Amino acid sequence: MLRTLYDRTMDLAGHRHALWVLAAVAFIESSVFPIPPDVMIIPMVLAARARAWRIALVATVASVAGGLLGYAIGAGLYETLGRPILEFYGQMDKFESFQARYNEWGAWIVAGAGFTPFPYKVITIASGVADLDLTVFTVASALSRGARFALEVGLLWWFGPPIRVFIERNLPALTIAFFVLLFGGFLAVRYLF
Image (tube, rainbow, N blue to C red; front, side, top):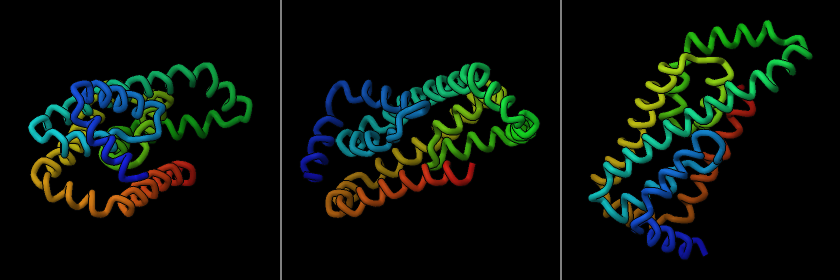
């Protein structure tokens, strides 16, 4: 079953509309969707190495745009939902302290989450809640997401055929590793924040 899914994904990765699907996935992943765009980037680059840098650019632009949606969600829901809850529980002072620290280190927090497997949507929404400067947020997002996708695509482009053989040979173990990292990221959010 896993092999059939892999083969189907590779077929779809070479489809003429694959870039649009990647853009949609990268956009919604940055604000609400739990699956990272890497699950599309990897097969797309392996299926069409000549389009590698275009794939990285589309993923970056769509991810940053989706991050702005996440920021808007955080900013919009804070006033309507977050503030009344914090006031009810008498936690506004703690939040203001958190917000000051977040604004001081926000560019680094956004950059770190944008480059690592950490769930980026958590940071995009938190940036809106904390009212992080929008220019700082956008620049940090563009640089970190761009660097992440460029590095990933560059490695796949450079080592293309051997990487594809490696993935196909170790597909079950790599699938398990992917889900362990994904689950670990959500655990990190739950217990570290």
